[in-house]
Picture 1 (cartoon, one colour):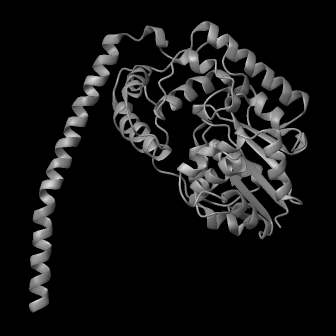
Picture 2 (picture 1 turned 45 degrees about the vertical axis):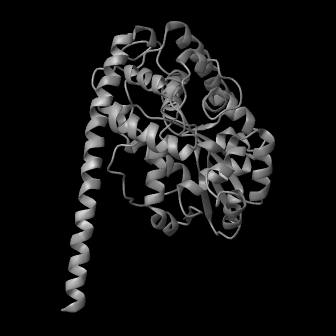
Picture 3 (picture 1 turned 180 degrees about the vertical axis):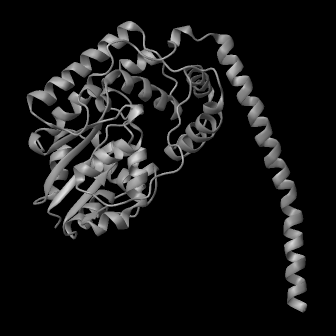
Length: 357
């Protein structure tokens, strides 16, 4: 059994994709320092997070998903040294679900690793991500979501998440990693995680941008698409076509959308949430790896424009530009399909010549 388990549970929208990209690209380097990343890839940790929470959506993801938590736990059980579990869906667990999972990992010493950011930036990023994954909800409706969900305060509010896990993991073994300021460079986030898990080696860093943001005009445009779409009901389809193809491949390339700025009343509510989280962290003397002021956030709203400032004409222009770029995609696809028979014919002819030469 592993002596220690570092359990990175998110939060969502805190650089988790970036960190996981590094971890999965450096499995051997981690193992060389006695840190095992169990499973065959990122998706298996996602499945395990849903499996340990008895999430009914698990069966729609993949026939192999059922039993993923037990498979990971069994691998941890057979692992010497330290093991690392990582997915932002883990943070959605109730206290009872977290307790059952931690008991399955016993007698390993469990360390909870929580990447976090202030509530205002969490709401702004989380709403965009919700829309990119198919939601048609506006910002204010999203800001009111207190119920258990993968998009809402159940997983975005640091204080709530910590209070659910504190009965399971002692405060002395909880590590909060605030997302660094952009001026510190993206590598700083990785260095903070590496320090937390005791990794000191060299590693391969990702070369491509991950989880590209889109402007507030483009978010509103995609929200309109979501309101009228039919199909694309599985998480894979929504990720591939709404989030990937429409959002990050096309809408992210449009100019002039502007970064979201929260209305003053929403910003103040977020400030209060952030203050409660910081108070809890300080009260319990939880280990903060990084700048704790990043959890409090700015004193005034940041960003370029509010949702209310977006006009119908701007949304229409964004959608028209989207249709224009998609028209090129359709033409290219049609040309590729037209070329396919001739390519196949040439391949068959070449095969015939080889056969009789």
